[in-house]
Length: 185
Image (cartoon, rainbow, N blue to C red; front, side, top):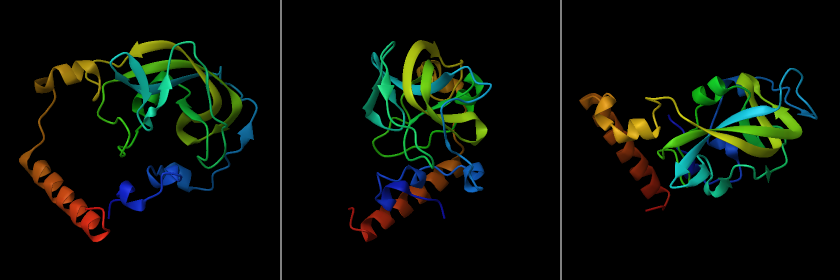
Protein backbone atom coordinates (compact mmCIF):
# COMPACT_ATOMS: atom_id res chain seq x y z
CA UNK A 1 0.00 0.00 0.00
CA UNK A 2 1.02 3.58 -0.54
CA UNK A 3 2.71 5.38 2.34
CA UNK A 4 0.43 8.06 3.78
CA UNK A 5 2.97 10.40 5.43
CA UNK A 6 0.70 12.38 7.72
CA UNK A 7 -0.50 9.13 9.25
CA UNK A 8 3.05 8.26 10.25
CA UNK A 9 3.05 11.15 12.76
CA UNK A 10 6.72 12.01 12.48
CA UNK A 11 7.78 15.49 11.47
CA UNK A 12 11.30 14.63 12.65
CA UNK A 13 11.90 11.76 10.24
CA UNK A 14 12.11 13.18 6.69
CA UNK A 15 12.81 9.71 5.27
CA UNK A 16 9.22 8.81 6.07
CA UNK A 17 7.99 11.33 3.51
CA UNK A 18 10.19 10.46 0.54
CA UNK A 19 11.82 7.19 -0.39
CA UNK A 20 14.38 7.23 -3.16
CA UNK A 21 15.07 3.63 -4.18
CA UNK A 22 18.71 4.50 -4.88
CA UNK A 23 19.06 5.61 -1.25
CA UNK A 24 17.82 2.23 -0.01
CA UNK A 25 21.10 0.66 -1.12
CA UNK A 26 24.05 0.80 1.23
CA UNK A 27 24.55 4.57 1.16
CA UNK A 28 28.18 5.66 1.46
CA UNK A 29 27.06 9.23 2.16
CA UNK A 30 29.57 10.89 4.45
CA UNK A 31 30.30 14.46 5.43
CA UNK A 32 32.83 16.07 3.09
CA UNK A 33 34.42 19.50 2.99
CA UNK A 34 34.25 19.53 -0.81
CA UNK A 35 32.84 17.49 -3.67
CA UNK A 36 35.46 16.89 -6.32
CA UNK A 37 34.38 18.02 -9.78
CA UNK A 38 31.52 20.21 -8.52
CA UNK A 39 31.72 24.01 -8.68
CA UNK A 40 29.60 24.52 -5.55
CA UNK A 41 26.75 26.01 -7.59
CA UNK A 42 23.49 24.20 -6.86
CA UNK A 43 19.93 24.45 -8.14
CA UNK A 44 16.79 24.30 -6.04
CA UNK A 45 13.12 24.42 -7.03
CA UNK A 46 11.16 26.61 -4.63
CA UNK A 47 7.58 27.84 -4.34
CA UNK A 48 6.90 31.43 -5.38
CA UNK A 49 4.06 32.81 -3.28
CA UNK A 50 3.57 36.49 -4.09
CA UNK A 51 7.09 37.91 -3.82
CA UNK A 52 8.22 35.26 -1.34
CA UNK A 53 10.48 32.31 -2.20
CA UNK A 54 9.51 29.42 0.08
CA UNK A 55 10.52 25.80 0.50
CA UNK A 56 8.21 23.40 -1.32
CA UNK A 57 8.81 20.89 1.47
CA UNK A 58 8.77 23.09 4.60
CA UNK A 59 6.35 25.76 3.40
CA UNK A 60 6.63 29.13 5.13
CA UNK A 61 8.98 27.70 7.77
CA UNK A 62 11.89 28.14 5.29
CA UNK A 63 12.14 31.30 3.20
CA UNK A 64 14.87 32.19 0.73
CA UNK A 65 15.97 35.62 -0.54
CA UNK A 66 18.56 36.63 -3.12
CA UNK A 67 21.92 37.28 -1.49
CA UNK A 68 20.80 36.07 1.96
CA UNK A 69 22.62 33.01 3.31
CA UNK A 70 20.64 30.34 5.16
CA UNK A 71 22.30 27.62 7.24
CA UNK A 72 21.49 24.11 8.41
CA UNK A 73 24.23 21.62 9.22
CA UNK A 74 24.46 18.88 6.59
CA UNK A 75 24.33 15.42 8.15
CA UNK A 76 24.24 11.92 6.62
CA UNK A 77 21.04 9.90 6.16
CA UNK A 78 18.97 13.01 5.38
CA UNK A 79 19.30 14.14 9.00
CA UNK A 80 20.08 17.76 8.12
CA UNK A 81 21.21 20.24 5.53
CA UNK A 82 19.84 22.34 2.70
CA UNK A 83 19.17 20.21 -0.37
CA UNK A 84 20.15 21.19 -3.90
CA UNK A 85 20.89 19.42 -7.15
CA UNK A 86 24.27 19.77 -8.84
CA UNK A 87 22.69 20.61 -12.21
CA UNK A 88 19.74 22.65 -13.41
CA UNK A 89 18.38 19.60 -15.22
CA UNK A 90 18.64 17.53 -12.07
CA UNK A 91 16.63 20.12 -10.14
CA UNK A 92 13.95 20.18 -12.83
CA UNK A 93 13.64 16.37 -12.69
CA UNK A 94 13.84 16.13 -8.89
CA UNK A 95 10.60 14.91 -7.31
CA UNK A 96 9.43 16.73 -4.20
CA UNK A 97 6.59 14.72 -2.65
CA UNK A 98 3.46 16.42 -1.39
CA UNK A 99 3.19 16.73 2.37
CA UNK A 100 1.02 18.54 4.85
CA UNK A 101 2.43 22.01 5.56
CA UNK A 102 4.34 22.10 2.29
CA UNK A 103 3.65 24.04 -0.90
CA UNK A 104 3.48 21.21 -3.43
CA UNK A 105 0.88 22.89 -5.66
CA UNK A 106 2.29 26.43 -5.55
CA UNK A 107 3.89 27.93 -8.68
CA UNK A 108 7.63 27.26 -8.74
CA UNK A 109 10.83 28.96 -9.75
CA UNK A 110 14.40 27.70 -9.82
CA UNK A 111 17.10 29.17 -7.59
CA UNK A 112 20.74 29.12 -8.63
CA UNK A 113 22.66 29.03 -5.35
CA UNK A 114 26.21 29.29 -4.01
CA UNK A 115 26.64 26.32 -1.67
CA UNK A 116 29.08 25.91 1.20
CA UNK A 117 30.09 22.81 3.12
CA UNK A 118 30.45 20.60 4.82
CA UNK A 119 28.42 18.60 2.29
CA UNK A 120 26.73 15.21 2.08
CA UNK A 121 26.43 13.82 -1.44
CA UNK A 122 23.52 11.53 -2.32
CA UNK A 123 22.80 9.44 -5.43
CA UNK A 124 21.29 11.15 -8.44
CA UNK A 125 23.17 14.45 -8.07
CA UNK A 126 21.43 15.54 -4.85
CA UNK A 127 23.60 17.32 -2.27
CA UNK A 128 22.95 18.48 1.28
CA UNK A 129 24.96 21.62 1.97
CA UNK A 130 25.45 23.49 5.24
CA UNK A 131 25.05 27.02 3.84
CA UNK A 132 23.14 28.17 0.78
CA UNK A 133 23.00 31.64 -0.78
CA UNK A 134 20.53 32.18 -3.64
CA UNK A 135 22.21 34.25 -6.37
CA UNK A 136 19.65 34.07 -9.19
CA UNK A 137 15.96 33.30 -9.70
CA UNK A 138 15.09 31.53 -12.95
CA UNK A 139 11.63 30.75 -14.32
CA UNK A 140 10.60 27.14 -14.78
CA UNK A 141 10.38 25.97 -18.37
CA UNK A 142 7.06 26.49 -20.11
CA UNK A 143 4.75 23.59 -19.35
CA UNK A 144 6.54 22.55 -16.14
CA UNK A 145 3.78 21.12 -13.95
CA UNK A 146 3.72 23.89 -11.33
CA UNK A 147 5.04 26.83 -13.34
CA UNK A 148 3.05 30.02 -13.48
CA UNK A 149 2.58 29.42 -17.20
CA UNK A 150 1.00 26.01 -16.64
CA UNK A 151 -1.17 27.36 -13.81
CA UNK A 152 -2.33 30.31 -15.92
CA UNK A 153 -3.50 28.06 -18.77
CA UNK A 154 -5.14 24.99 -17.23
CA UNK A 155 -6.62 23.99 -20.60
CA UNK A 156 -3.09 23.56 -21.98
CA UNK A 157 -2.51 20.54 -19.75
CA UNK A 158 -4.28 17.22 -20.33
CA UNK A 159 -7.29 16.68 -18.08
CA UNK A 160 -7.25 13.53 -15.94
CA UNK A 161 -9.29 10.67 -17.29
CA UNK A 162 -12.50 9.54 -15.59
CA UNK A 163 -10.73 6.38 -14.35
CA UNK A 164 -8.00 8.48 -12.71
CA UNK A 165 -10.64 10.66 -11.04
CA UNK A 166 -12.38 7.53 -9.74
CA UNK A 167 -9.08 6.10 -8.46
CA UNK A 168 -8.27 9.41 -6.75
CA UNK A 169 -11.70 9.47 -5.09
CA UNK A 170 -11.22 5.90 -3.87
CA UNK A 171 -7.79 6.74 -2.43
CA UNK A 172 -9.14 9.85 -0.72
CA UNK A 173 -11.92 7.76 0.83
CA UNK A 174 -9.36 5.19 2.00
CA UNK A 175 -7.23 7.94 3.60
CA UNK A 176 -10.31 9.43 5.28
CA UNK A 177 -11.19 6.01 6.72
CA UNK A 178 -7.62 5.50 8.00
CA UNK A 179 -7.65 8.97 9.58
CA UNK A 180 -11.01 8.17 11.21
CA UNK A 181 -9.65 4.87 12.62
CA UNK A 182 -6.57 6.62 13.98
CA UNK A 183 -8.67 9.31 15.63
CA UNK A 184 -7.62 12.20 13.37
CA UNK A 185 -11.26 12.92 12.44
